[in-house]
Length: 64
Length: 462
Image (cartoon, rainbow over all chains, first blue to last red; front, side):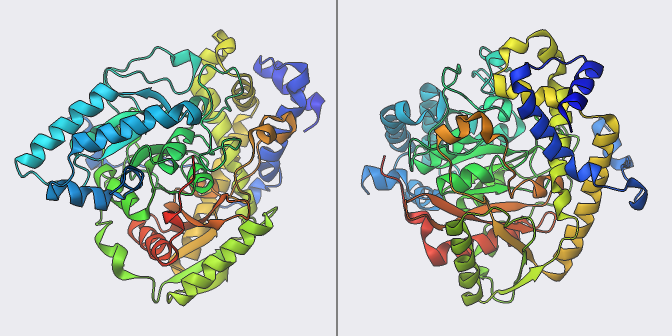
């Protein structure tokens, strides 16, 4: 991620970060997002994310 | 037993003495409170010392023992709670100026369970700010110091829990672990720390960092003590939507069964990148010990392990979602480092968050597959020993990758156990990871190794 891309994201999210801290945030996000950007999402043939339902659990939670 | 020896005794030893009535819970609690008063001004492990409450709990335990009530091995055992666990009527700060005056009206479920087991509440233990920031000098709550070297970090975010246990200020503590916050301090402080399976221990009443990654769990000086604490903590809690109904096992009895015939897998990729030479040597020695004890050790492959960085994407995005309103309305009440980390979470796109969750599912599947061919995984807990505060306060330090977060992503139970010391006397640690809800095997491997080596019997000179 370049500093310009970081600034674009900040504008879109209405988030302000002091100029002298931008490089640190850029590095944090670049490292964190590296595996995401390396992913070919079309090659992942899972049904995730998924929600599961548990009828018994629902009864308990609502005070059977 | 000398005072120093008493403060470093195990829960089993103390519990046995309490039952024999040759030690009173009140006498024990007074000894620990005196030690906290003497040592904590240098260590900063405690935010709040609940002396009156501790003595009241100790008297209640004494009364129960005199009635012949011996239901729990934790009866009369003094413990501390990380300051993100809500405690009824007692200040709970989360290490944050935002909550500096918050007094909850209900205990967290884990606190309730330890108190119900008869534990004595010594106080609240410092946490990194909202379990994620770093306390720079001048922070409202000073950072805990590592008892092995006061110029070094005890790890985080359960920093006070690690420091208190290493210094003999408590017999057990609760930590929380979103990317390694139980196992990191355990590693740096030379103690044991267990991140149980996601859903095994309740998160109800514990301040949130990241809903899908947060785990609660026990920390103690020995693996057996972690097992005693886990037996009291584990089990379904309707107040936590992620709580599991998986039956709770017996965690203490199997500890003595040894490791003969167990298969230990070592994933060589990812976990050894940038590793310190002394960490590597201690880890290989630990594997040799496990072999001598009868385990078989083999290398294993986790093809998507490099995707473990997805943990940080999920953590940042969920932490921002939880704190967004305060970040936008009271940004000045967050420490500078924490504020930037959390704001970074607001810059992650929805698509990136979803892809991170998909990578997580893939990694979980691969680890589950690997754990069909071996019983546990072993890795170094931390690639390096505890850093100095000067190192961490350097703006270039950033947020180094750890060996613990892959098991937050996958929710698997993971235990940190001491495995040696550097030449300069800093603790080193091995991480044992197991199948979902198989804490019993993880603890058994850790206990067998620990008892064969005795690293846990060394204590810092404070």
